[in-house]
Image (cartoon, rainbow, N blue to C red):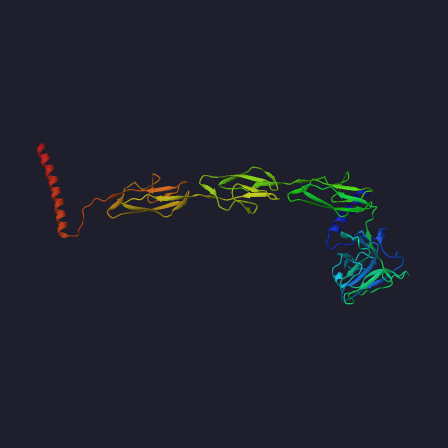
Length: 450
């Protein structure tokens, strides 16, 4: 049961720390021994944050930070039941106007109405390493303007003449190099890592990074780990460990020994699928592939069809050819096949002209042929063809191939009509005479038989 409770607490704390405007890391308890302050805060009185026109700062001047790493800030507050936003601040030892605009640490934190009197502790999003030439810092908080009254910063009124132990000011009151001091000590503490704490190291991993939120910790401190795989990779399940212990999620309780964090990354195998297609098929050389693998395709259109230009895509990315580089996601290959348009040509003839209503046509399309004989000529019956196949009438259905239309023209045999009456009569007489001659010859033959 204790183990399950511990796991739940680790998970909850990891969520809180990942929130940009975070609530307190802990309410209750007292600051540990590894904090820096000027007095012990055994007596206190309250200072209210009321209705103001500008932010109010509550800072504690503290010494003894040289070469230390600040991980957490503690403050004793009395909350009368309001939700309040504050800003955690750390300034250099001699605050000036320009430095106040550029704090060493600036982090948004919140107070909830349900959280009342007690010590509040706030973990720094990024532990602050104090430079080796710095010993004194101003650590504290600012409250937004026009915050309703109800939050009290508690300070110690023990008689210790702490003239430089507290600096309180507002931007309207502040001028360069001017300090406002109160002879009382605010209960603000800065927690730092002790040299005697256990160390935390991370073994470098290929194809990803693993980072712990601190390099030192005490027993039972909560250590949060950030895992960042390279693109196309993932953490191997069950490989994230501290020493020989499997990590639950990305957090663990610090044991009473130095810790080495290890983890392994593996390539993610993404799915390669082909969408349902008509009038053709596409086959991929693999059904799964890793990021940046080459996927090759076999594209087979049906007879009379071809791949439509620009239609070949994986997901929404168009590509040409028969290969693409695998992205870091599942892919669906899609394409469109279209009918191939075939050419229509016409064979020339000196005695007439053949034509078609289109130069290109797809299989199954109707093609209409025009026939225009020269004067005195006509199309030879049965000679109109495409690729040697007779055309019924003047239309045919386009096959799955290019075609050539052919036809023959012949001279029309007839008696010229000049329009002259005499010539017309002469022609009539010639026809009668010819008939008489033919008739006479028949009679003569018949008589000869008799």
